[in-house]
Image (cartoon, rainbow, N blue to C red; front, side):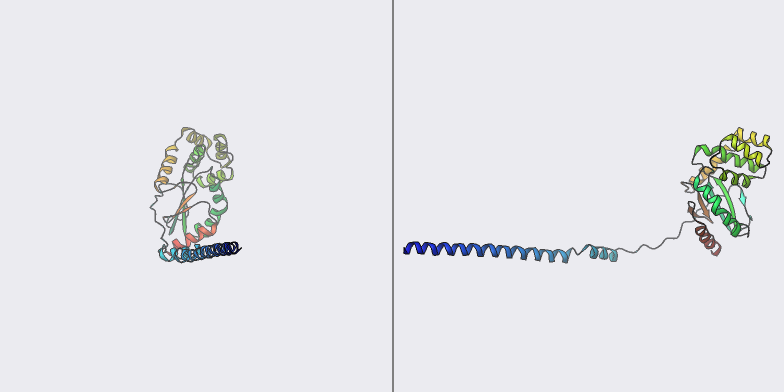
Amino acid sequence: MLGLGKDKTIQEGLYALSIAIVIASVILSFSMIYTGSLLTGKFAGTGDEQQQQQQQQQPQEQPQEQEQVQVSADDDPVKGNANAPVTIIEFSEFQCPFCGRFARDTLPQIKTNYIDTGKVKFIYRDFLVHSTSQKAQEAAECAEEQGKFWEMHDLLYQNQGALDVDSLKGYASQLGLNTATFNSCLDSGKHANEVNKDTTDGRTAGVRGTPTFFINGEKLVGAQPYATFQQAIEKALAG
């Protein structure tokens, strides 16, 4: 009986010891996890803290002044006073929908406020994106021979869905041009090289799409709202 009691006592002691070891292990594990998280937070920081540190370490980029590009007006059509202090050169084509939007919505406002007041001269240069616009570009050049470039310019942008050769000849008649002279000019491809030269000059100046503008040498891309052009023109006038 004494032996059994002794064994029971030993078993109970071992059982208690096992429980104590398990509890101690759990406590130690939680302690290690907690300490690790503190160390991680200390050395790694939160995402926000890391971002703030990187922002503080990285030098802030200073705004760069826009590069001035020397672009020739060539011998292309000019609207406005030749001695105006601001020159806008547009590279464009008649099939481009964004060019049409600019011609119909924005150019009239620029004309009223800046071209007609002698502050801006506006120059149109060809930039061929769609090969199907080739003849339309040539048609405007042929109309220029008879002093009606801008009238043809406006008419083509009003009829961008009909730029086939027959329609182009119809527009010449509508504008009162000498149709025999115009038709001969258009059929012969007389101004094809001029269109290609403008396009090449545009690429050299960094034009990648239409419309692209150079306002006293500063590039402006796309059919921007009038307010954007106004800001750029006022900057050029002030400079």
